[in-house]
Each structure stands twice: as C-alpha cells, then as structure tokens.
Image 1 (cartoon, rainbow, N blue to C red):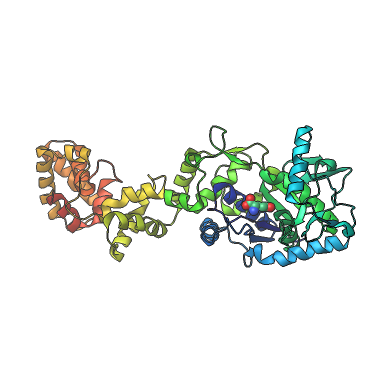
Image 2: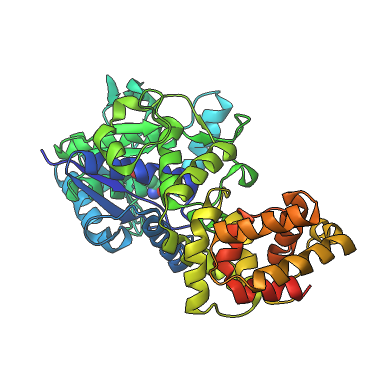
Length: 464
Ligand code: GLU
C-alpha cells in the first residue's frame, strides 16, 4: 500500500502554527514511507474563504519546505462530486430526504431542551414515504445513520475511541439548496484522493465518528486516523498570539529559519529518545505515529530560539547574507551593493555565532554597511574620551604604514602600540571597536578591521 497523507486547511486565515505542525507530520509520514503528501484547500465556506488566505497558506508551506505532491485540490470545485455521492447514498437507501422546516427543527430542539434531553434530530423523516412530502418544500438529504451499537475508531494516537450510535443523529449530507455539507465533502475528497492516513488536530476527533459512518455506508475503506494533541501556551492555556499563535510568515519575519521551525515543531509533540536536534534526513528516517504524545504540547519561544541559534551557525554564509539583506536595506534606506553583500558573506562566520534570530543577526551586522560618520551607541561614545581618541590617532598612524592587512598583523600592531604607550591592549582595542562598529560588542575586532579593509577602517578611526 502506498501511503497517502494530506493537509486540508480551511483558507480563512494564515497558516497558523498548529496547522504547520499538522502539515509537517503529514509530510514527514508520507516521506518516511515513500508515499504522497497532498494538499486540499477546504474552501467550501465561501463567505469566510479568501484568495489572500489561500496564498498565505501556500506561501507558508513553501517557506517551511513542506512541498506537496501534485496540484492543490479545491474542495469547492468538487461539490458536484460530493452531491453525486449523497445521491448514490439516497439510491442505496443509506440516506433519505427530510422535509422539516427550520421552524419545526427549532420547536423540536426547544422541546428536547425543556425535557432536559440532548438536542438532536429525531429521525422523523427516516421512514416516511415521499408521498407525504409537503408541497413546495425543498428537502435536505440526511444520512440514515446506524441507531444501535457503537462506532469505534482505532486512532493511532488516541487509541481506541468509541461512541454509542444512539448519541449521533442523522447528519445532513446535502442542504436544501443542494450544496454538500463539510462532513460529506471531507470524506468524499479523502476517499477520492486515496488518502490512507489522516493526521490532524484532535479537535476533529468527534468528526471522525460521523465520517467513519459515511465510509461504512459507501463501503469504502476507512483510513487510519491519527488525531494529534493541540498546542498550548507555556502556561498550559490555549495558545494566544503572545504565546506563538502566529502565521508562518510571522515566524519568518521574527527571524526564524524554516529548518529550525521544522525541528522545533517536530519535537513539540513527538520524541525520539532525548534527541533535540534532528535533521530532516533523521526525521524522515525516524518519524512514526507511535512517537506522538497524547497530552497537549506547550509552545516555548526559548527552546525555539536555541534551536534557531544552532541552525544559524550551520547555515550557509551567502544564504544568511541574503536573509539579512532586506533588514539592512530597510534600515539604510538604500540597496546594498554586490561588494557589500560579499563583505557580509565573509563576515558571517564571526556574526552568526552570536545571533539567535535573523533579526538579531541583521542588527549585529549593520555596522559593516553603515555609512560614515557612524552613529555611536551611548556606551561606545562614553568610551571614546580624549585619551582614547589620542590613542586611536596614534594607532591609526602606525596602521597607516601597514602594508598587508590581516587580523593577526593588525593585532600585532595594536599590541606593539599598547606596549609602547604603556597601556593595556584593551585600552586600544575597545576604542577601536567603538570607532569601527559604533558599539562596545562585536565579533573579534581585529577580524572586523581586516574585513572592513584598510581604507575604510582608517577612515572610520579618523572620521570620529
Ligand atoms: N479544514 C479543517 C481545518 O482546517 C481540517 C479538516 C481535516 O483535516 O479533516 O481545521
């Protein structure tokens, strides 16, 4: 059997973090088994579905590197097929027309409430002949659901879950206007798409019972279900924006790398021993539904930060230079030159060791492409008193005569100068840092000087 999974978002908003994790698990499971990962846009709610949301979801998935197989399927476009299945169920006696008016249903509900009973449709049209149909009323199509026994789902995460069939009423499959309901559409689509494993949030667990009944009525194979626990905030409460309930693009804007987010989301409710850092290749090799925990996962930005720092250190330097580019261009209000991008790439090994996010990385790299005179941070300005400026002028004169310009040579010159002047190396190096970077923290300063180049470095020292 070829494994087929799917991700089935409703395009009513961005690709939120819970959806991203569902997509990741479905993607990994398919890749693990050499199967297919399909994408279906559940756009039947025409009032709430937007093109912008579809675009945001596709964009979010692509950014996360969760590439789906084939074309994305529109659920709305398949509505005639959904209706066809409802009609087949009618023809097979698995469904029936119900002519209840909204008023009648309201009255039924009120009576049930008053009697302290659960409110559900009582099946009054289940066995009534069509000859009794009131004139001019368009019926809905309801499923003739089993009334005895129970429906059991062997969920791959939740275990065996069951409901008594008398707890479920005859659900509507087609509305009076002929449009299919969500419950029907999902089942028909999953069946037609050949989905073998449905991995989704456990907020859909109760839907699975009704969906299983439709599969049975049609004589279709019920897919494997894996309902994964939702993501909560660090305090155990429902995930709020502050806790990370953001769209995928928000994580990109906050400076997270897609591979870090993948690793983080994977670890959020799935474990492989004590492994924290898990590459894509390992994830694909190891991932299985049995590793998914049953309790709600807790979102934790600190953990995501530390994973992101790890992946930043691993990332290709030119890629990181490209990633910080828009941030720097925004701050500078101009386009960076190819030479500046090259400088940033060469400077990256020293920069990426210290950053947790792309945003931090950009902030720490800004001085490389800053224009003179550099804006000095308060601490840096305080450091550059008269004595420090005098030492820098002396150092500059010495460095001017330097023929080759490498970090060890610049450092040797600074050491020689400090010795001559009877001061500590730090008393020369710190002012130099302030002059070259505008800050009191930076990558090793002699490396910075080398990377800036002799001309620029000396201009920065002299331009104070
Ligand atoms: N469209 C549903 C949602 O976005 C998912 C349905 C499913 O996975 O079966 O929550």
